[in-house]
Image (cartoon, rainbow, N blue to C red; front, top):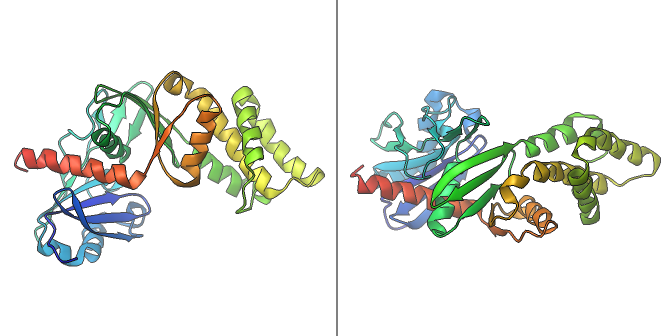
Length: 300
């Protein structure tokens, strides 16, 4: 990197810290570490950031951060903003100034009273998606450990719903009797489709169907790849049925790449929904840029 950054963009999650050296909206450099919120005590956030940012702070005097850095267990707790609201326009919280004078602005999360729900980090992705697609009205699906379905209209986040589908997949596949049946790096697309159909048609039967995967492995030699894919299909199918009021008849955008984003895209296509797919990093950075410009417009 030859140019000096104006500011630093930060995406600080539970397991990873990602930062970008920025000149307005241009990325000069990118760095990443495993110093996620889950590994740090409150007094360890500043050293973790300065270790990674290094020489960037010679030029940048401010940073804009999203994610779990603003949680109750993070560097500083950034209160939630209630829906309906415009993502990217909430007043950020200032973390303790670092020893070298870098001021870190932490973006608040978003909350919902009925049904009770919260997001932290995804609000920046939604803001970024809307910055890149200003005319979008519809639903944004954000697959992950806790998948979120967010309804946006006229630039506002109206409502959202979180599903612990990823957590359930990890827990069931790693900490139940099915751990003996689903250990595979391979994938069976036909088995995923079968699970998806079963999960959508009879979600109330999922607990029984899960044990059948174990029994099939013992009795008929069901391959681990097929069992793993079918487990995923069952859980995503049950989620789609519950989230149907969000995606039915709506424009749908998926913020997520790789296999997981593709699975949601496939699952929706089976229901006649053509969903676009967008990079998480691209929209996160666009959301951080949007907040930076909001701060810059208010003279920081």
